[in-house]
Image 1: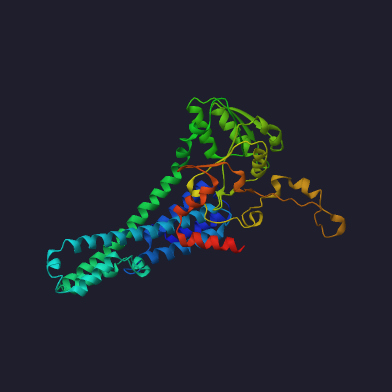
Image 2: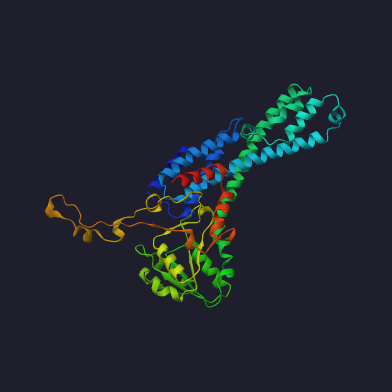
Length: 413
């Protein structure tokens, strides 16, 4: 198999050169890369989960730094860190339960309980006490030594301990890889799971407005069409890349009645619309949305005319970060050539001053920020949720330490 460092360097280069675009493709390739890293990582007999966590963190920091704007990379890294902790905790809990059953069913131990009251009390407290952090990272119960202290297995017990440790390592890696495979499957099927809910939200003879191009939105609308819903779609073209024109052509091919409008016509057309359905680049921990440029304008128009503003997005876009100054930190300035070609731009150069400094500057941001107060409903592969519930939903996907840390940073700022 290729060396993991080579795979990491190749993917980092792709992220830096923007050869991987879109949250879906980025999230899937990140999960596949980390799965390879975990499968090839040599894990010591002690601190198994800690070794995997350190390895994933080291790789994840490189990937996030390569393209900080692509938030799906960090989302997947944190999801896999959460998976490692959860699987390690599950193994420790299983070991505790198994030992508790063996203690409760040991006839000889019960018979000699009066002869060793101190040992019985200590063992009972160990069974009832939650495992320590050291125990969870080691993957060995605190009280594992107590029953063996009163037995005389000798070398056979030492061999069995060694076998248990190596099997525990294999078990942890196997469970983590299986969970990552489930994560990859969830990323691949999120469009279908979201589309299954379309018939509950789109009704007969409605007018739907969207902006730009989103595969999730397209599958959502087409699923409603397949359920014999008759409705009309207004598509704002999404300048300057005009991805809305591409979406309009795809919808027409699928048999939907579609009308293309300019972005500046949104306020003029919004009074005819029953619902706005859009995709997202990321959903922040406060329920705010990082979305294609222009969607904040659409959200304001929808609020002004009391039109529901619905965001459809897969769970891999749920981000535990808070949007501090999103216009600067969470934006991507694209090439000015999308607005002006080189000939038009060169006409604005001031060659008379000798420095050739341009009199015209072009700013072409890729993303907008939509605050949670403008969002009516989120539809994910787990169902529909209000903006106020997103904090709870995101907390289920990420470890508490990462999530709480980001919340403290946000509160300080």
